[in-house]
Length: 366
Ligand SMILES: Cc1ncc(COP(=O)(O)O)c(C=O)c1O
Image 1 (cartoon, rainbow, N blue to C red):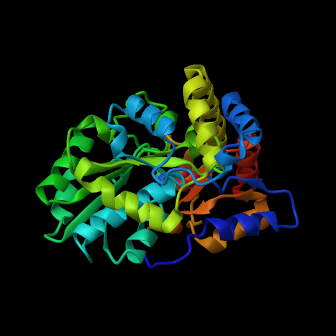
Image 2: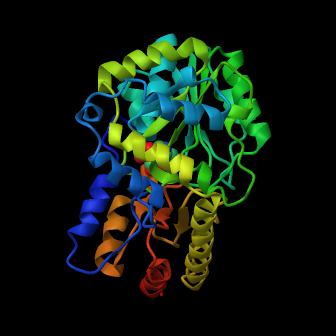
Image 3: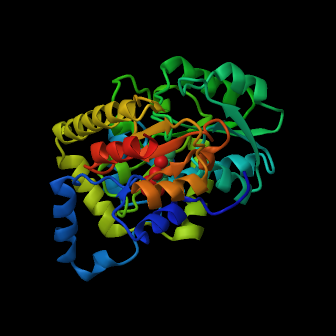
């Protein structure tokens, strides 16, 4: 995959420019409410003194970093607060490729498309390891693919787009492979609060100084526009990551960090459980209607996407545009995620109209 602009924005604007009503299942923008404490934090911020409208400490507000560190069982010095999970992944991959310039970055196929783009942008070489039929990653295949130039293994669990949640053995094996090659495991865990299986394992639970864990409040608190995320680095990698963050961003948004802090402190676990329950209902509603459409589909263990395959209708951009125009449903082409699922389409369950969307698909493919 080349260094190219990911297709998300193209498909989103194609759907919104359509002349007909379209059920938008393209983006990863939750349609459920952020926690009340997050809104309260933003409102409260407006009345703070002028000094709190000035630069935040580059690595993040101290009380937010401490809160994150406390929850994640790490030292606050290891935490860099970033402009979302996107920047956290960039910093982690950049750090790995500084250690091994031009090195190999192992990615999965299907892949979250920003990883190959970042790899190329940072001068790395992509190697894709195909996911198994159930979306899981076989560490043995990663071990076989790893070259002497390995700089990083970048994985995402719960997974976008397959919905797979990696078991402990996978996470441990991946960290061991990274260690054996003196490389970095980058574990993107932005969907950890959307583990529908109850089996999610964070890479932070594996003791290793060869892994960076990235996360974000975008999905956790249904606020992708807030732009607050974080990365947890091993002690000996964190300082250079902080420098890069400072040079690229200065710091991330101060009101957003305050709101994220309040949301972390005040949000009841019931908020997250209600979101998971909503998703479970949507998965059921969407997939049973897909049965009527005669489609093959994935049932996610986590995150909020369903992959579906319709006979003789591969997941190309052209077919996605056809579905927008002719069926009134917008998804993402499977080919945007690599080759393993290029026959498939990805639908994000971020609309209450999932059943209607599947009915439209059933009518279209009838
Ligand atoms: C796997 C994965 N990582 C990172 C991100 C980026 O999230 P953020 O909004 O925190 O930058 C997304 C967004 O969809 C994602 O799906």
